[in-house]
Amino acid sequence: MTMIFRVATLAATLLLLCPVQTQGSQDFGRNDEVWQLPGLAKQTSFRHYSGYLRAGGSRLLHYWYVESERSPETDPVVLWMNGGPGCSSLLGLMTELGPFHMASDGLNLTMNPYSWNKVANVIFLEAPAGVGFSYDPSGDYHTNDDQTADDNYLAVQQFFAKFPNLKDHDFYITGESYGGIYVPMLASRVLQDPRGIRLKGIAIGNGYLDAQLLGNALVFFGYYHGLYGLSLWTRLTENCCNGSVSQHSCNFQGHVSDKCNEEVEEASYVIRDEGLNIYNLYDRGEDRDNSSRHFRGHGPRGTTRMDRSRELMLKSLNRALTTPNLRLEPPCIDEQTVIRYFNREDVKVALHVDKSPLRWSTCSDVLKYESQYETMRPVVKELVDSGTLKTLIYNGDVDMACNFLGDEWIVNTLGYAPTSTYKPWKHGKQVAGFFQTYERNLTFLTIKGSGHMVPQDKPAHALQMISNFLFGTPF
View 1 (tube, rainbow, N blue to C red):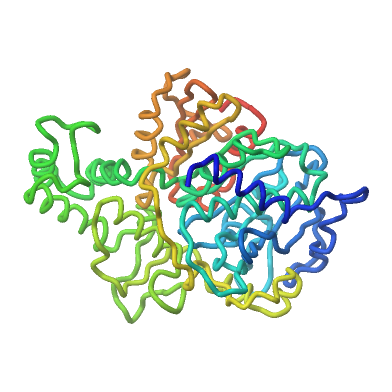
View 2: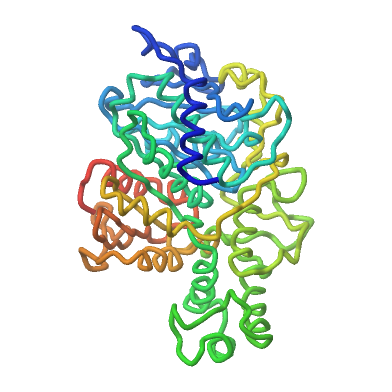
C-alpha cells in the first residue's frame, strides 16, 4: 500500500473516530480523570487521566496522561512509547520517567523527583493492542510495524479530540529501544497529515534504528570494552574486514565466509551466554545458578523487557537464541511488584481499565508481531529533511542491546554536516556524556555510565536532557 493511499485511508477513518467537539469540549476527557490512585499517600498537585483511545478496527489502546507539574496550560505535550516490540509504556511510567514509582514494599507508590512531567504534559501509550491494558474485543492480536503506526496515529488524533485544549501545544514523540521503529513511523504519519497537531520533534533513546549497523557496531563495542582479547579480534578483522578495519569495511553481520562466521559466533557467545547484563555492561548480570536466579516474570519465554531486547540484539547479529529457556532481567528492577500492582482490581478500576480481558504484564504474551523494517534511516532522513522538526538520538553508553556506537554510525550515515565538534555536556559540574549537533536540528548525545533505560539509570541527567531538548537550551 502506498503511503499516500495509507494516509487517505487513515483520514477517512478519523472522520468516524473523532467527531467535532462542541463548546466545553475541554472537559471531554473528564470521565477519564483518575481521582484516587491506590497506594498514593496524598493527592497529586497535577491532574492525570487514564482510559482508552480508538485505533483501527475494534482495537482500543490504553493511555495514561499526566499533566505538567509546572504549567500544563503552556508546556509541551510529550508522547512516550516503550519498545519490545510488545512491552508496556506503563513500565516506563513506573520505573523510568513517570511521576509514580513503586515503593520497596510493593504496595505503595512514591513520587519520582525526576519525572518528565516536571517540565511537560506526558502521555504514556500502551501499543499495539495486546500490550498491557490495550486490547481488541475480537481477540485478534496479529499486527506489524505499519499497522502499529497506523493505530498509533489514530490514537494520537483521538487523544487530541479528547483534549482539544492541548492541540495548540508543541507536540513531541519520544520512546526507547523498539521505539526506534515506533517513533519515526508515527512521526512520519503525523507530519504528512497533522490535522492541526503541532509536531515539533522526536527523541529516540537507545533506538533499534538499523539492525545491520547495530550488529556490526556491537562487535567493535565488545572488543573496545574488553569482552574478548586481541587474538579473537585479530581473527575477526582478518576474516570479516576486507583488508582494513573500519565501519565501512567490516561485515560481522552478513556471514561473508564460514571462517568469519565462526569468529563472530565466538564473539557472540561472550556477549550472549557468559551472563553479562545486556542492558548495562557494568551492572550485575543474571545468576547462572538456577537455584538462586532471580526471575522477574512468570509465564512463557519472551514476556520481559530483557527477553525482547535480547532478541533484538541477537537479530542484529543474525544469531539465534541458543538458551531459549533462560530468563534474564536486570537485578535492579523488580518488575513483579509492578505486575502485581497493575493486576489489582482496585487499581484497574481507578484507571478505568477494568473492562480489559488481559492480565497486565511487562511485555505481551498474546501479541503476534511481524517486524517489517530492518532500518529506519530513510524515515528518519525524511523527518530531518522536512526542516520543521528537532531530532534527538540519545544513548546510554554501556548498553549492548542497542549500542551507542551503532546509533552514532546511523546518524553519520544520514549525510548531514556537523555544526559542532563532538564534545562533553555537563550535569552540574560533572561530565554527563558527549554530544554532537548537525544541520537541520539533528543532535546525537550519549549519557555516560547509563544503560538501555536512561531515565532509570540516570534520572537527573535524563530530565535535564529532555528539558534542554524541548526548550532549546544548549547542551
